[in-house]
Amino acid sequence: MTPLEETIHAIRPIDPGPMADARSHHDRLTKPRGSLGVLEDVAVRLAGIAGCCPPPLPVPAALAIFAADHGVHAQGVSPWPQEVTAQMVANFAAGGAVANAFAAEVGASVTVVDVGVAADLPPAPGLIVRKVAYGTADLSIGPAMTREQAVRALTAGVEVARELVAAGNRCLITGDMGIANTTASAALICAFAGHDPASVTGRGTGIDDATYQHKIEIVRRALDANGIPPAGAVQDGPEEALRALAALGGLEHAALAGFVLGAAAARVPVILDGVIAGAAALVAAALAPDAVGYCVAGHRSVEPGHAVALAHLGLRPLVDLELRLGEGSGGLLAHPLVSAAVRVMHDVATFDSAGVADKDS
Image (cartoon, rainbow, N blue to C red; front, side, top):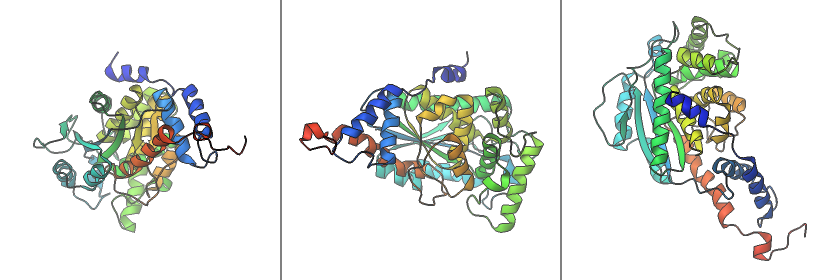
């Protein structure tokens, strides 16, 4: 059995017993029942993930930014030069990006993983090199990756998750970097959620109307070139999911999917960032449906495909601030909310312990 197969085999559904206990405990706390809304659902989910009530606090937290380049960039889908991917990796390592600032604010560590940057990167603090290839092929004319490359990138994500958990982290946060990766994300969301390119393709880092229409056409062309119906969801099991990932995804999408699988196998919550993470989570869910239980949707991106992906996964975003940065920014901003949801379970008194009359008493 390969490491990827072992990881998928280890994933179990989140535990309904502690979830019921958490819901019951919330109902006994000194507040009106249900008054914390979605935060109560988050706490219940984390109890199911940990298999105990109350669940442990999701700290320390670790952000992993997976970086890779995309052959489809040659089709003019982004105004940014491809070299920006490598330059931003250096910026992350130097601590100069928005993700670094947000991570410092919430106390999360930052690890940058090169799974497919189209350049050789110098050693830097916090940089891990797991390069599978120097970027993908152009998905608009054929498969972006070979099956072997997709498996290697998935495995890299699993390994990073495993290493971060072994280091003592109790919450993982997804991050990404890759010029043109919103094009691959739109193609993946079409394939796995069964939507037309026009309904899920967004403007990425900011493109004009003509480029936007061209980008939609490139996504449509990619689906056609790889024999994937433009609005037909992948439903034929893990092997077909792996084929679709290799055909349409980026190396960072594959690694992020592996990262989600690794978190689920370790029974640790993973906070998803934006549309790239949403697309990757669709892949992870197709490979191991129970992995979705370990995911918390950090935010909702302005990219239209992100809302589609979250709806398909059955996840409700915690933050909606019209973000479209990536890097893990939205996931980091959501982490204090996840921590607060669990803190309530530990610190808030019950009606009985506080001597407060319950409305039903």
